[in-house]
Amino acid sequence: EAGVAQSPRYKIIEKRQSVAFWCNPISGHATLYWYQQILGQGPKLLIQFQNNGVVDDSQLPKDRFSAERLKGVDSTLKIQPAKLEDSAVYLCASSLSSGRDRTQYFGPGTRLLVL
Amino acid sequence: AQSVSQHNHHVILSEAASLELGCNYSYGGTVNLFWYVQYPGQHLQLLLKYFSGDPLVKGIKGFEAEFIKSKFSFNLRKPSVQWSDTAEYFCVIIVTNAGKSTFGDGTTLTVKP
Image (cartoon, rainbow over all chains, first blue to last red; front, side, top):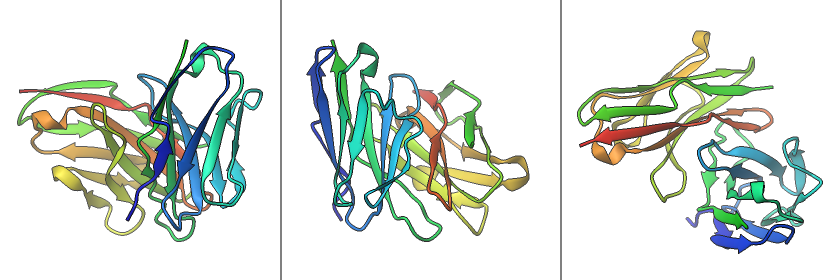
C-alpha cells in the first residue's frame, strides 16, 4: 500500500515570496491533516479536511496561509507572502474518517527555509 | 478544547535502563491515543495506539503503554532501552467523533551506549 506522498521535500525561498506544498493521501482516506512543525516543537495542526470540506482551521493564519482539497483527494497548502517565522517542516497526514480507529499516517514532510 | 501534556522534555538514559515517558490529556469524551516516534532525519512513525479494549497496549520494538482513564494518562514504557531508541517521542490524542488531533510537545530521548 502506498503511503502519504508530499512534494517538494525541500524548499528555500526569500521572505515575501509565495510557496505551495502538495500532498497525496493514502487511497480511501477521507480525512487529511496539515501540520506545521517548528524546530524543537511538536507538530501544530493547521487544517483538517474531511473529503473536500474543512473540519478545523482554527490555527491556520488565514491572512497568509490557504489550503484546498478540491476533489477530496490530494491537497495543496500555500503561503503568500512568507515570513521568516514560517521556516518549519510542513507535514501532511491522512486517516480513515469512519469507525473508531483514527490512526494518522504521515508523509515525509516538506522542509521550508525562509531567508 | 483538548490538550496534551508530556512531562519530560529531555530524558537521558544509559543502555538497558528502563524507560517511562509521561503523557496526560484533557478531554471529557472518547479519544484515540497514540505514541509516535521520530528518529533523527526520518518522518513520524506509529509506535502504538489505543482506541478500545485492553488498556495495556503493545507496540513495535518492545514498547508498551497503559491507558488509565481515571488519570487521563497514557504513559509509554520500555523495560530496557537501546542506543537505537534515541529519538523524539510524541503523545497524540484524536477526538473520536470529529477526528480532531492534538500533539504533545514531544520528549527527546537520548540513550548513551
